[in-house]
Image (cartoon, rainbow, N blue to C red; front, side, top):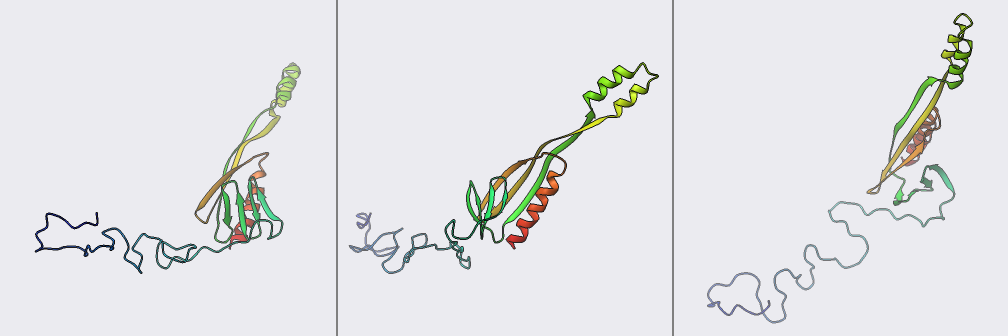
Length: 177
C-alpha cells in the first residue's frame, strides 16, 4: 500500500508524501503517536482529558479485618469485596429493596379448637381469632462503585429483618463518604 499510484499523471498529489520508508494513512508518524494508539509510559491512561486516574488500593489482607458483611458483600478497610470483584469504598452507592411480605392467617390450632368447642354456645368461635404471622421473601441489597455493580439477597426471617438491614446499610453509607 506504500507504492505510488501507477495511474497518477504527476500533476495532482493529495495526502502525505509516499516516499520509501514513510508510513501511509492510518499509521502514526515517528515521534508523535496518533489518536487511538498507545502512548508511551505504560500504566493507566484516561480516555478523556480531565478524567482522574483511579486510586490504587492495597492488596487484600493488608487493611485489617472486615468491618461489615451483608450477604456476600464484605467491607474490608477501604474496599468492598464481592463475587464481582473488589470495588472502592469511597463514593459507593448503596440501595436496599424490601421484597418480603408478612402474611396473617388463622392458626391451625385455632381451627381445631373452634371445631371442638363450637357446641359450647358458640364460644369456640373465639378460637378463630388466634392468628399467626409468617414472613417470607428477601431483602435485596445493591452496591455500585468503581464502574461495577453487585446485588445480593438476604432472606427475611421476620418483620424485623428490614430494620436490621437498613441499620447495616446506613453504616455502610457512612463508611462510603
